Length: 195
Image (tube, rainbow, N blue to C red; front, side):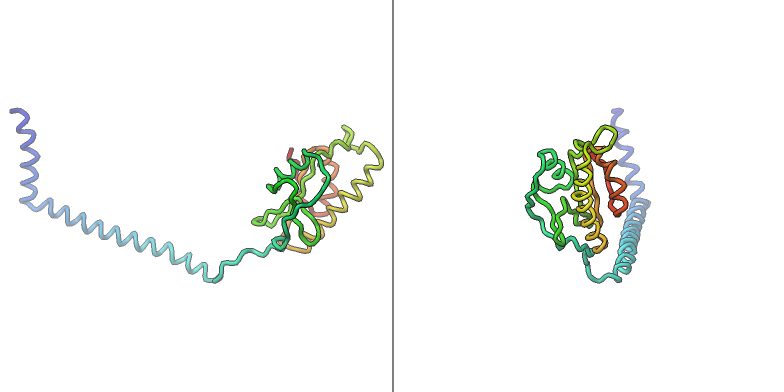
């Protein structure tokens, strides 16, 4: 019998409130509030979209940024290099081993179109250096001057003639990086030491 009053009380309260019209008034207020909130949300949604639409009127067409190296070609280029150098080049550029980007008659180890970035990766070059950073043999100076700097100069000139293209040289080894840094910087080439 004690449970009966607990069940009866909520039912009685509900009937009293209904008789007074309180529940109906609450429902009306809730419906009005919901309609008002829905209308405000739609207006806020429209307000967020409108400025963006106005801002885009300057550019009626969706054009890609102009990147001249996009005109290049991915090609298999037969270079003699160590397996470690091939692996490093593939890791840095994301290209398959043996593939390079050829643009304006010059090959680049990699190309990232979305960044308009041409890449060159150098690995295992520390074998040519003494521990103090000097080249081991005098004849290697001419190799570096003729081969590496000639390549860097040619690539740098192509990049300068084709803005907004950029060029980064990556070095796997610290001695080669330190040795080449001043020459490459003078050519406007960004360099990174990434083991």
